[in-house]
Image 1 (cartoon, rainbow over the protein chains, first blue to last red):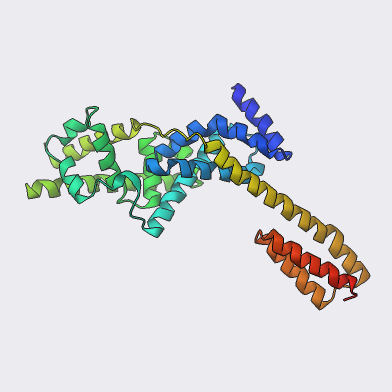
Image 2: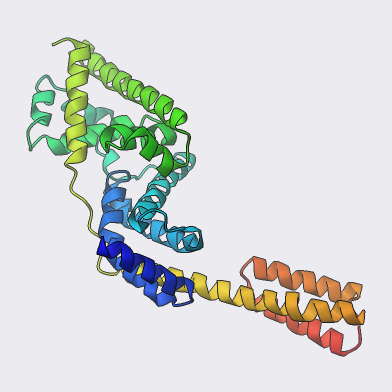
Length: 198
Length: 107
């Protein structure tokens, strides 16, 4: 891919002291980095996490060996920045994190009506479904959340997810399995609780 | 519908919703904001390297060779290096200036 050759050339220039050349890499890859962050953090935090990813990449640029495309290396850094966002969030117990806000216990009631599943399968129900997923994912730990998102939601292989997170493949496999079980239990329990009340 | 079937269908619907989530586009100032931070980091790194070079390659070898490193000079040298490590370049410059003055006075 021609871009990858260009990326290497720009990286050489940055390493040689031309810091301003880094703007080329930011411009070229910012949409992709934001797209990755969109799938892992609330919309109002995407910009902040994407910026963090580019700053981290600059700090680690001397460690880029060039044995993989820069975009892959940057994607792994972005995923780790997203993971750190949730670890920090859980540590600080912030209350104002984007779209989880309107899907608490009250919002959940509206989303688990009898026709909810059918509605979620239509375009109009997608936003509600996304909010419900965020609510359920919010019950998981940061580790469970990131591994579940990578392996089940994003469709990365175990090896790819392991490389992105810096974990062993066995750890990813075990954690992914348990995380999915936890998510299913959360959804099933919420559905049963709702049915029990009606 | 059984609750486990319902949970499985619900899960599939949620996965689809996740995949269809519209991406957030970076704002118009995104690159500028990143570059402000990056340039600051590069400047700090450059200053740190300059001060380290001064200490490691010029000052310390000369001081050791001439035997003029005293407890007082050593104290200011360590303080200056700690300031550099903390990114406090003004403090480092101040400690270095004191160091050079003391050295000139024969300490």
